[in-house]
Every structure is written in structure tokens, then in C-alpha cells.
Length: 331
Ligand SMILES: Cc1ncc(C[n+]2csc(CCOP(=O)(O)OP(=O)(O)O)c2C)c(N)n1
Ligand code: SF4
Ligand SMILES: [Mg+2]
Image (cartoon, rainbow, N blue to C red; front, side, top):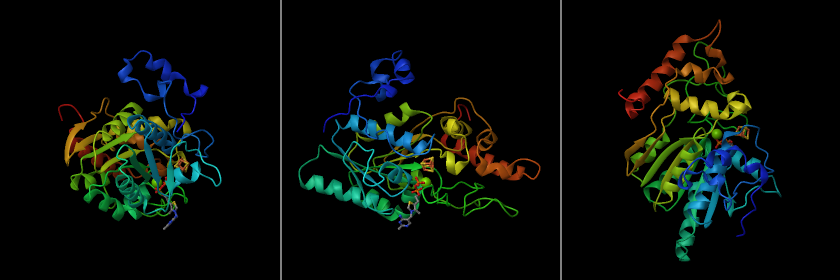
């Protein structure tokens, strides 16, 4: 497959910053021979964390595999904004089947490649939180327990964005979605529901599980590259803010992702064979309020008729993550 020539807008500040680093530490974006898996012309909203995360993740995967890779995509924003028929923004072998079966299709592609003796071609499955945590979950668990040779990446924007911001099993407590409106004594999504899929993936004791955010793209690249060191089932869960669904400014996507990590609400870690092997420590701890206030999906928690008790419950969730994962030095 011919590489697409690098475009001018991709040689911006990252390249300048990268020049200060050792070659091995530079992001793939800085390399002249970089791949460009998700091309211009897609229709994601301005500031879409999912578009950013997918582009960096798949570019890193392409590099790690020497461009010998197939991607399988679940239905969702990433699929819809990148492939309005008859166009596509993908510059890689890419398949879409259904909302719920991406892990099974990825397994089938991996099995087909194995049967053909093409162990050099690697398979990445990807989807949103709805496709991964909810409707595709049975297929994903099967992929894990059979230890199929697939890296599955979940881009978690914490709701079904493509169909109009409905709650998913990854929607956090108190968040307003169209199906968890900000009304009643406990507005927004209820506490005590939902699934922690990185923890569930670890319980399958698959070779590699990791979390990342679009606030640290080098860490995301590293984790994709590391995942490709393993054979068998691997899972990467990436937090990708969605300006439309979260009610945040397009220019705040990276900042919000950083605050999710720095507040302790989104632990960033790696695990091998079911054991945590590394955590990204919080550099400058912030209260969850700093994160929540930037998003209108939490607007009902603040102001004259706000819910300070609910903010305190969300803070307790972050504090528990900090304890569980040892996210703050000395705590
Ligand atoms: C069986 C089935 N049910 C429902 C839909 C409609 N549908 C398409 S995408 C989507 C939500 C996708 O949410 P998510 O996986 O979180 O991806 P996002 O759009 O948020 O990136 C839904 C409900 C469908 N395509 N197929
Ligand atoms: S709705 Fe959200 S996830 Fe979908 S394209 Fe827009 S910003 Fe991205
Ligand atoms: Mg989603």
C-alpha cells in the first residue's frame, strides 16, 4: 500500500516540540515516513476527541506493524463521520459490519489471516463505548476468553453520541444525557450502575490491558505500540471527550481529558495477565469540580439550585480510584 505524502498542516508545533526530544521519544507525527490512517475530509465535530484518538492510535498501530494491518470498526460516530457513502477518510484496509459485532468480525479477520499463513498482518478492532461496553460486549468477552489475536480499542465518550447522546453503560453518574435528563431530586445518570470494562478485561487475564486519554498522545502511541508486542487478545480503553455530548468547548477537549486524569476520575494504567504493571501518577491533583464545571452535562450540579452533595459523591469516586491505583505519590 503506498504511503500518503505528509501534508503541510501535519508538520506544526508537534514537529517543533519533537525536535527537542531524542528520536526514540518523538511522536510518530513528526516522522516524514509516518502513516496517515485517518485522512482529512471526515465530518467529525470540531474538537472531537474520538477523531483525534483514533488517528493517533491507528497511526501508531500502522507504524508498529510496518503498515501490515486491518481495522474493523463498529457502528458509531467514528464509522459514520469517516465513511459517508461513497466516500472514506481511511487510508488503510478498513471494514465496517454492525454496531454489535466488531470484536467477532475482527476475530474472523484474524482467523482468516492465520489460515492464509499471514501472521505478519495484524488486526485492530475499534468502536465507541456503546459498541464495546453494551451491545458488543458478549463478542468482546468471547474474543478475550479465546485469546484471539486482536487489539480492540474502545473510544469512550461516555454515551451513544452518534444517535443523539443516549446513556450507555459507560455514562458516569450524574451526567445528563437525553435518556438521563437533569430533572428530579437526583438529576442525570444514577449512581451505582455501569461497567468498568478495563477491569472486566483484566479479569479475563488477557495479555495486555491499558487505559489512555487524548491528553497524552505520546502515552497513547506508546500503549498501542506496546500492545502490538503481544500476540493474543489486547484491550485499550481511551477517554475521548465529545464537545457535542458533553457540552464543552471544542478548544477544551485536551484540557478536559487531562482534568479527568488529574482529578482521579479516569485512572491511566497498564496491566499484563490481569495484574496492574504501571500507573500514570497524577502530576497536579485537582478537585473533580474543575473537571465537571467545563461541561454543561453537569451544569445542574452547580449554581443556586445545584447539588453539592452529588459533587461530593463524584469526588468520593475519584478518591477511591486514587487509593485503588495509588495515583498520588505517598497516598
Ligand atoms: C443493532 C443496532 N442498534 C442500534 C443502532 C443505532 N446506533 C448506531 S450507532 C449507535 C450509538 C453508538 O454509540 P457508541 O458506540 O458509544 O459510539 P459513539 O457514536 O458515541 O462514538 C446506535 C445506538 C444500530 N446501528 N444497530
Ligand atoms: S458527536 Fe462527539 S463523538 Fe461524534 S463526531 Fe461529534 S464530537 Fe465526535
Ligand atoms: Mg460513545
